[in-house]
Length: 101
Image 1 (cartoon, helix red, strand yellow):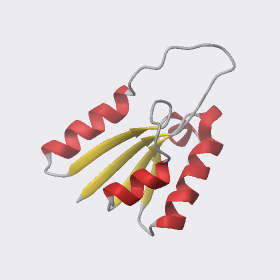
Image 2: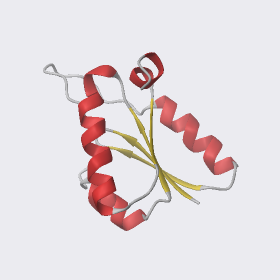
Image 3: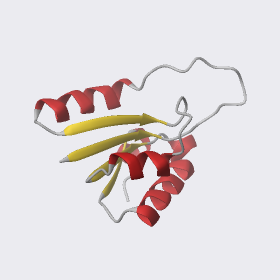
């Protein structure tokens, strides 16, 4: 199984340092340990559009993390991925944990 973990693009109006998303790194490590081929797509630092990454990697499932300020971008990312490949997409992270559907 091929797993793609996504941190959606999110820019604050102030200059901030971009650091790797620790939660996605933990999930990737557990997924790889279970035998899944896993990549992390961090839209804050990637030059490639997410759609191109999906076409290239061909994941079987996508996990998208989101906090409340970036939830709309997470929804846009999920819709864009679904338009290219009809696969399960799971949203997680602080917003989903606090405000589940």
